[in-house]
Length: 311
Image 1: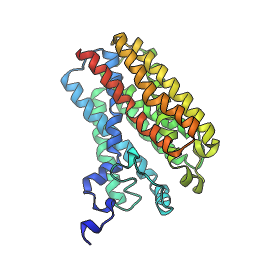
Image 2: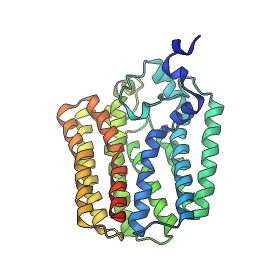
Image 3: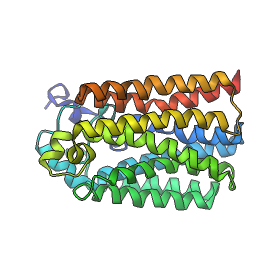
C-alpha cells in the first residue's frame, strides 16, 4: 500500500506516534505552569544548571504521566475507538493522532517502555533538584492511575485530576526553594486546581460525552448533565481567574500593576469568556474550544512574567 493510500494516522512517523501518546503539543504548553510558579516565587531566574535540569525533568515528567494515562486506559480507549470515537477536528490533544496505542499504531510493550524511560529521567532529575520532588512525582503517577481506574466508579475523579495537575507547579517551587511559603503554595495549588477542573478535565470529558454514555462512564457531564457541568466550568474558571490575579499581586516576584492587569485580561479572554459562551450554548464545540483556549492560559501567564522581568 502506498503512503498516499494510508489513513493519516497510519502514515505518521514513529516518533510522532510516541509524541501523540504523550500528547506532547499539549504537554509543552503545560510546562509553562511550573516555570511560572518557580519564577513567581523566586522573583528572578534560577541558576543555569537548575533551569536546564528543571526543564528536562518537568518535560520528562509530563511526557511520562500523559503517556501513562493512555497505557492504563488502554482497554477503555480501545472500546471508544471500536465505537467510532467521535470527531476530533480542531481538538488540541488530537494534533498528531489520538490514542495511538488503542488504535494499534503502537504496541503495549513499546508504550510501556516509553513511559518507564521518561519516568526514570523525571525521577532522577527530581531527586537531584529536591528529593521531595521525586516523591511528588511518584505520587502524581499513582494518582493518575487511580484517576483512570475511577472512570466507571465516580465522577468525583475530576478532583483527583485537579490535584495531579497542581503537582508540577508545587514541585517546581520546591525545586528552587526547599522552604517556600505555605500560603503561596496554597494559592498556587488552588489556582491550578480550578483551572484544571474547569478548563481541562470537564471540557475533555464533555468532548467524549456520547462515547462515555455508551460505556457507562462516570464523568461530570454524564452524571450531572451538560447544564450543571457548564455551571461548574464557569464557577471554577472564574475562581481561577481571580486566584491568578491574586497570585501575581502577592507573589515575592513583586510584578508591576500592569502585569497583574494583563494577567486578568488573559484570564478573562482565555477562561471566563469561553466559559460564559459554553454556559449559554451547551455546545460540544464550545466545550472543546474551552479546552483549547484554557490550555494556552499558563503560557500566557508565563509570557507576562517574562515580559515583566525583561522590561
